[in-house]
Picture 1 (cartoon, rainbow, N blue to C red):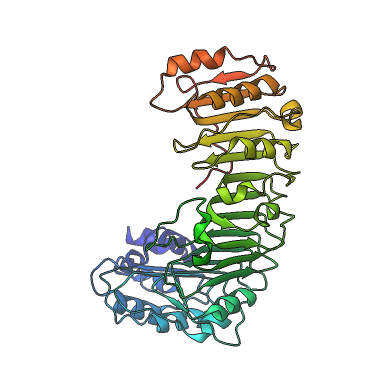
Picture 2 (cartoon, rainbow, N blue to C red; picture 1 turned 90 degrees about the horizontal axis):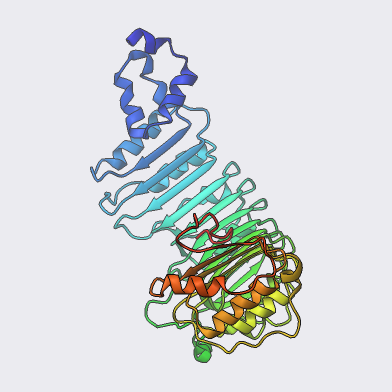
Length: 433
């Protein structure tokens, strides 16, 4: 067996080692003299604290012995029971000096907030950077990250707004950004101004010391800050739990996918900035209702429409009137949704007459207003191929099914599906969170 192992080429042994944790790969050095120095050539090093208390010593020693010409990736996760004397700064200095491509640092330990060496923010080889939890982003001047394509800032603290602006503006080719904020991250105004950015996932910090109700506009003077996004090349955006004064100051002509959930205080430009989107998941709030009337969604082909505490029938009809290319429509009503009066529009939306192919209604209750809307959609959707109705669990399914089946359909070839017979193949392209 030892001879067989010795006969393997170095490249193959390295590939085998990449499939096991770094600590196990290092332990393989006792298997054979031939393997003794192979682990020192690993291009990927991942350290995750197991609670043994020796993580600091192990990281330091393995980095001292590391001989690979380049370090492709370094990942360090320190858990709540990790010793607080681990020298993370020295570890990062070592990685930067070795031309690291990917860095993933997650500090969940009990130590104070940790800042990183200035060399991290001038690393010209860094392509992917993930900073999570007890880290303070203290960006010096000058700063330059010319190769950085992907950046994740997860529950970190910022020294100031200049530190955020510095790390974003110095990344001249950045195209992917994920932000998850914490309440005490030291920023009031959060600005994302990146001309090259193509994907943005942003989750705000929901205030823990005050109740924020959707559509409650009485507390506008108590907003916790602002979110400003200026990203003309963006094609994929997710905004979740935004209690700030959310303002997208420019439209995004390349926008393909938008996931909008719990954006409580959007300004009057918010929906207009999404007008070029193709796939839209929207949780409607009262603040959006007034600005939804005359915005044209000329490219929209898929719409997941979520309602909770909003009079939603009229805004929905405006969306349909203003979305001539819409092919896929999902309505998801919550039990708290009010029961607005149904006013049949004076003209049939063009998307119903010529485009709509798939229609899904989740949590259908069968109220009078819902019956009228459903009957209207079935009676006027000439290209409809599938209609999937998912009643709420407390209703009489058989009764609802008979009621819906009796509604006239202009598209006689369309299939009408209910929970007992469908395979739930369609869950909405945008509904991915």
